[in-house]
Length: 504
Ligand SMILES: [Zn+2]
Image 1 (cartoon, rainbow, N blue to C red):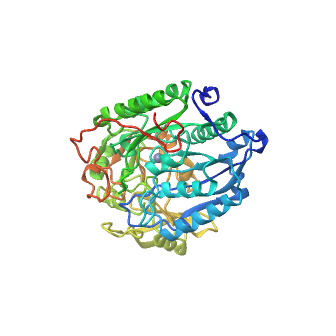
Image 2: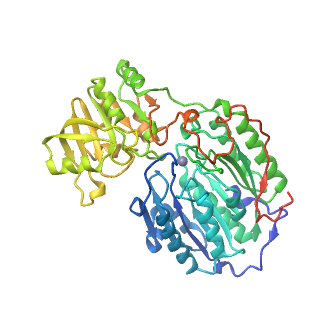
Image 3: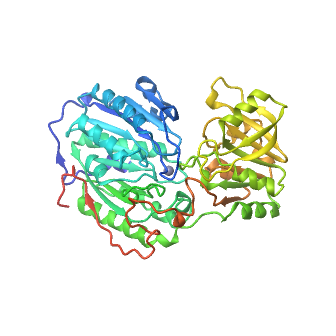
């Protein structure tokens, strides 16, 4: 790794080093992506909270065991993206995290595994709040690193509180582990070499949905492709570029370039270059696959000789913050009298429970959709035959497959994505046998992309509507492209407050 071979030019030394084996590092964090256009709230039952020993033994974090110092677990709270986090839930999670962190003091290092697009009711910059609260506990001498999703939005407070950070470099995200490793390599390197690095941030007033900024397609492909070489230069510990999160009513919602290292002049040059290139490319960001209305996409799919046509119901994508309870696609398929289609899935607990009560083979009247967010979200009334019920003791894990005319629809008790083939096969569905496979997704994750023949993206209604230029106006967003199409801008850098080179 370049991180481990970087020179320490110009870096200032921290306090006298205790013996290497005495290094004490903690880790934890909170990860959720919240659309402020969503009417639902993320509550405690929506989070998976892994604590203490459970977190230490989490297979994802087995990468931490390769370091010479033990990483001590606090807690990690993760949730399927959705609406704003209920304030009480956030406060409770934060309080427990801070208590666990306090119990591990004194600490030399802290690694925070964040997403970066959390929104908490009544609070701006919730990720910054979490990070700043951690800093208060660990004190000024502790080095803090963090990993972020590519769709995280940074803030001045975050840049002023952390010592270093790294963000995913791929969308779809296939480099989660590499990113965590970059963030932690840097931390261990800085502790070993007694470096406090400089962090330089250039916020870029551009907001794009992930579907127009996938790193599989230009211009994102070439913008992100230069990061490894930039990162390999002596004096650069990390080079990150973030798209930010567009469905957030927050001033911090912008794209960002962030450089961490020990050569402030180089970091500044790189940050300005990335920011300028991103800005110059702003009009090139486009969807990577054909798009249209649901009607358009279904008509086009039926005319194709190939299968399965994977149709993304992109406005209701729960992995971007959509609610996942909309039945528009079902209604449209029925209107087009499509045969041999599958919809996976619609979050509808009452309909799912009704199927479990009726049993496999039963035919029943069902009202599907609009149970979580009824605003502008009409349900569909159908007669359905239950063809499969997932065996599980956990009520939220229940999933029912029903047949409605020629359409198989998966109903789920909780909001969940269908990102893997086994999500289908575990319900007795073989997606490649269908003419049309509707998924609540934006861009497809690789496993589903591989079977798509082809993929069409329906620009549907929902909490993550891809037609961002026509989103309702919000209160706090700073002027950004494309909301201000003729915006004038020149890149600027902010040097993190903890950097030794504040005058860089
Ligand atoms: Zn993301």
